[in-house]
Image 1 (cartoon, rainbow, N blue to C red):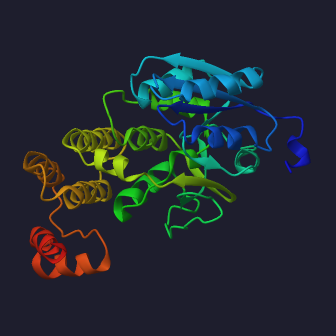
Image 2 (image 1 turned 180 degrees about the vertical axis):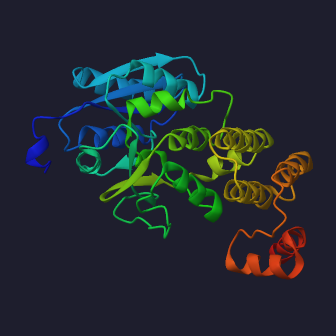
Length: 325
């Protein structure tokens, strides 16, 4: 339960859900949003020109809960445009982004609001996210180091880059003023839009507070989604998102620790894409070399890191390909 000291202080939380062809899943996602124990939420649904029956499902929920749901229907412009539209339509003091196929535990928002009580707008709350496929009763935990407090948003961002970890976007609860400082979602990106956006949010965040009770259930993408994410256009967009992150962070701090982390970021891109798309690999290597970091940096699992130490990063990539072929 919310502590008695804030029983009469329920800031509005806007749950923004962009939807594109998620008819199989969006009903359960909406139920998890409607089932929050926190008493003051609005749900902003933005259908991004779905061609399945997603909009019909959203409309049915809107008609059932007209006092709790705002429904927007737009032509297909992409998830970033849909999310920006949702932010504009929202009225909440806090923003909860929620992917249309993910779920949040009933206490997620309540426990994070309680954690943020008395803190400034520049504090961000996070929680654990876990993987699932069919049922949330059978989820898989990930032993990431991001599930803790951080003295600044930048420290969390560097954790992502140094250890190749991530935070599911639905794990955050963010004050509206911090969203405004970050600016709009980048509508030119088709992958890692959330990562690039939250890199800007975290640059303005003074504290990251981890809430250990609530959970986000992150649905593992299907085979079709994964293959689509590996296309040339997706990989080009991913590299563009990393360059945008670099440009943003260097405006805040240009130091050896930042450059070292950026080198690892571009190394990870090369690791994931190799041996495909030589032009993108060449660009990534150029961006990596531009960091001016002469010392060796190591990414990947323990076996790959051992190969890198013995034979160098590029040779380790070639050996990895041979071993896996």
